[in-house]
Image 1 (cartoon, rainbow, N blue to C red):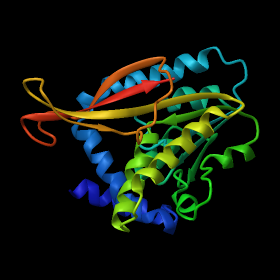
Image 2: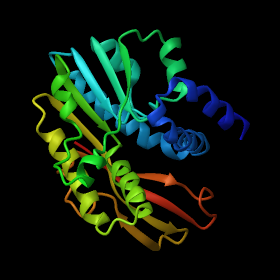
Image 3: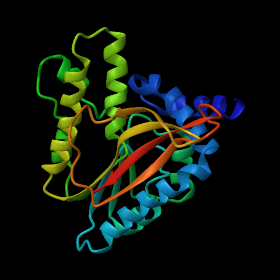
Image 4: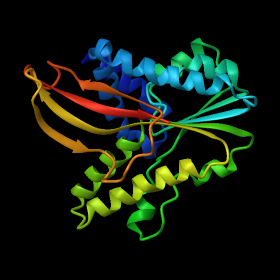
Length: 250
């Protein structure tokens, strides 16, 4: 708990005020990632390998934007920083450990942007959400990576909608997920979508105790690659069961 407290304290002053309420959840994710490092390693390597393979045959590498850069555990930041003129990392919060890593690595071409990628406020106002419209203003954009953020947009929005007792949370969440998928596919540059699509709770006998769709009932794009990610391995949530997520890459 001491490390978590220090991390929170160090991140607070470098985070814009409107995003500070999200620091705690980011620190909690950092803590879980450390506890589950062995179980998460194959997933993280799969993500980084897919990104590396995509950029290997790109002729132009001017600007790359990573949506949901998070802890950078699933993003090959060294390859991106060396291969592109400019790297833009977008997320609600950039923890102090991430900022320190950028300084230590002397990644002078990396920019950190705090931004809410859900566009929930616009959806609640009855407008068409356009969470990725800001990308139209990014010059020389050659690649956009949606890095395991899509399901989190839905989960976070649903939590807020339930807290405010919104009468139609399913419809709103579906609208946000669709807006992200549409925004990615409409980009005039190369795109990578890494996302978990569903999860299941499994006991030690292999029996599925619970399943949950993470894309609000929408059909995910055709996957180029797919794998399973034990987000909560045995012992994290309980001794006798684990939470396994289905992940696609395209």
